[in-house]
Length: 114
Length: 113
Image: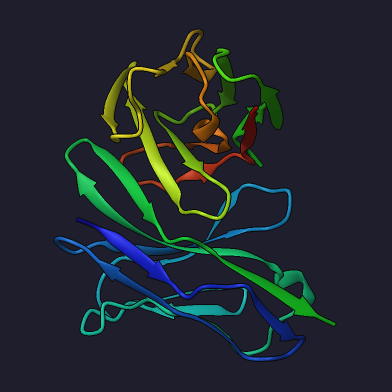
């Protein structure tokens, strides 16, 4: 079946530190890959995505590259800010007939300290 | 900016009671979803809904669960007789087309005592 494994949290960093949150996946076929973010008190928001191998998704200084050879989609940011404190979810999407569903990782809590 | 809205934000109920969670998807969207996240665990797919019927459901979505689009704007999730293990955050989501971005609501936290 399809699954996503994420680096366990919580992760605590100082402002301007480098961030990596690891994500690997198992999937039948060729999934699209996503990172979602959940800020405190808010819903899940799409942060970035990549739909095929070697694609790089980027947004708000975050980047992730779809690596088919290592089945990975690690999230990185060069310099985190306090406002990046949130829970980050890696997810994959496999088309399934007329319906589609996301498979999520367990989420990684990030806290950035000033 | 259009958004998916969910009510209530938090509901506390006794085991065995019926609960209805409400969602108002973005108005021109056609595909609707419910997901749930038990505290500390993964976000899990429950059900997808298109063209006034369920398109797919997970093994979690048993006979105790039902979904409805009663009036063309609301999309509801009903749990007929809640169990302790139904305590979770329930997320509604919608998308305009089969390949569009999925937009999530803020979630409804259900606590079953």
